Image 1 (cartoon, helix red, strand yellow):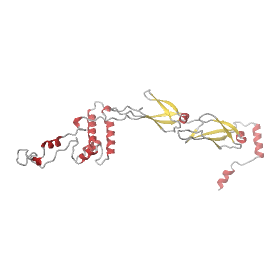
Image 2 (spheres, rainbow, N blue to C red):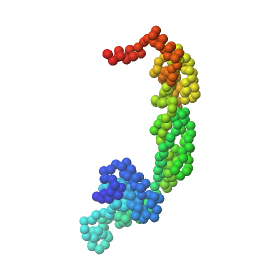
Image 3 (cartoon, rainbow, N blue to C red):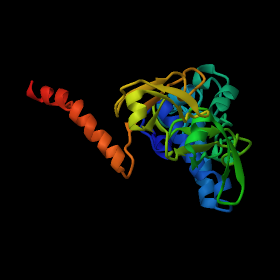
Image 4 (cartoon, rainbow, N blue to C red):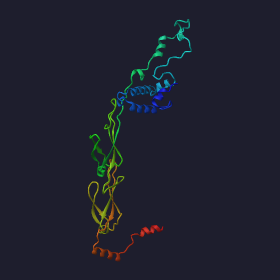
Length: 310
């Protein structure tokens, strides 16, 4: 049995219909005449591939082809005879009387020469509609635009621009799809899409961890020691924060609901305290610290050293 049509599509005889369809679509995109104007050789191969798929891409026709009942062009194969004159009648050597068991000769010729109109080389080829290719871009956006959402213009190489709506809370590396903003389709097929990968720029104050926002807040020695209320920047503006008395560097305070907000969830803002000393310590401040050290000495590393001994 012939396997020429399988070779034309570049698949094996035991390929699944899904594999055959996939191979066909790849070849159609590669060979489409719109992509190769005035290339007769390419057009001939395009027709050949289309004709092959019309047969082995159809379950019923494929079964007929595999059994050898139709040929590579989709036509019924003529019945095979054992030799001699196929029109030799049963009652003599010259006439048609009684040949083939008295069957109707019109039926015989109809079976032998009936052409299958779908996909033959002489009958042209069926134009297939294809979706246009997707276009891929990368776009840098600010930390706040990613967190709060917004709109941004993306300038293309040809000078055109795309208006991109940035979803609130989008994460770095995610892709925004703009339907129909890719390459035009073929033969009436839909246009491709624009696929825009988001690159989020770092922020000097805010750092993202999932839906939470982290901020390092510098505080003075007396704000940490005595307690205080200070302003803390958030994504949506400054808010007041109470610093507990006796706070130390590294202590984390939580602002509920002040983190990244999506359609379904809302994160928090984590404020990590950092006790800062002045760049230059005057004599009065130094004397105060020396007095404090003399009368209120303590070991801030006691817990760490105890843990090392376990």
